Amino acid sequence: MTDRPLLRADRVALNPIPWINVKADPSDPDSESLWLFADPAFRADYPRVLRAIRASGFAATMMEVLDTQTLFDYQRMVEDADLALAPGYASVALPEDHGVLFDPASAEGVRWFDGVRRRAEESLFFGLDTIFLAPEVTWAPGAIRTRDAAAVGAGFHPGRLSRVIDVIGRAAEVLAAEGVRAGLHNHIGTWIETEAEIEQALADIPSALLGASFDIGHLAWAGIDAAALIRRHAERVIDLHVKDLDLSIAAATRGEPTPYRTAVDRGIFREPGLGDLDIDGALAALPESWDGWVIVEVDRATMAPEESAAASWKWVAARL
Image (cartoon, rainbow, N blue to C red; front, side, top):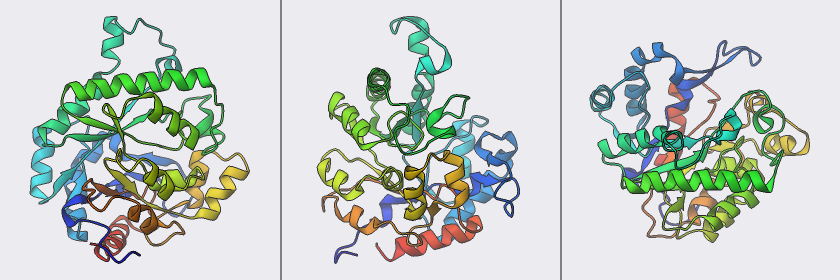
């Protein structure tokens, strides 16, 4: 760890994902993977989850308004938990991946970005002016980067990358028009996954329109030196996601085609400080004047969610 504080107390948050991305039977790694944000029944449990985040030590959580609730309902939950909000996450799909073709200037082309507009509205309602922006993660049949070979740029095609970059650029324009600055968010399983793809997107879209909101763990999973990438784009980095990894599992998935969920079930994700990733080195690559958000995100907890949050806060507290 460096000799200067790496984190600001008012700029660190926890993503509630340890309570959300779970196995149907936690004792059986082969049981079904559940994503509880999509379950309407989760609405009733959300207040408890937010209170648990606050009890762990975190004073902020990543904004995630459920599809089944209003902004005011979510606001009450967050206030009742005595939490602040950190920037949320927006994604946009490539129309062709869904068998959709349209003129970008058509009504259908405009409506394609309605979900992004909703995220802008949510952000502004809660006083947030930055957001993580990524291509869609899809599990549909034929989704080679999630279903067959994660973290290696499987199925790369330069023409498709250009299309994805175009769609990301248009989404960033939609957000900018509302006063929200987007940061490119790399995520394993998307069409912007490898270092070359990230660099191409950042080269093709002006920095005034699109910043960088990297995920340190997903960079490392793809074999990317996170500290070097952050230094290279230091003036462009807005916010960050932080997680730890089992780097031996990450390397194995790059050496042999491995589905995304298989890697997760093997335990690739770790709470900060419990894996092999040099998170401190990546954070130290940020300029000393940097004041963005750091959101701790353990995509699959290695322990009970409350214990995972406490372990994450212990790591954070040593770096404030």
